[in-house]
Length: 52
Image 1 (cartoon, helix red, strand yellow):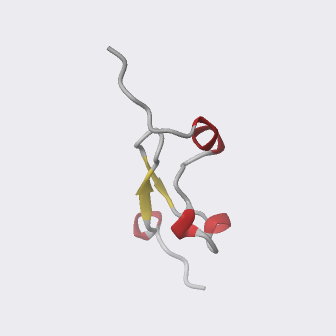
Image 2 (spheres, helix red, strand yellow; image 1 turned 90 degrees about the vertical axis):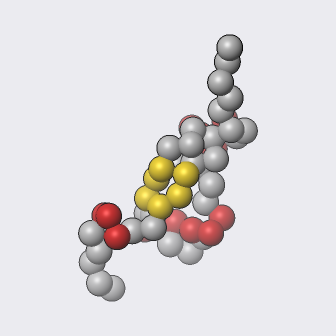
């Protein structure tokens, strides 16, 4: 496997915090199903909403 620069890796926006996160080796098999950047965001679930 060819080594890539971090900037060349695919990225997505987290479904909860809306911050970008990059591909990780542990997500190699199921990258298409990954929606959250961390376990904390996955547990929180729904997208964050602004409170007024």
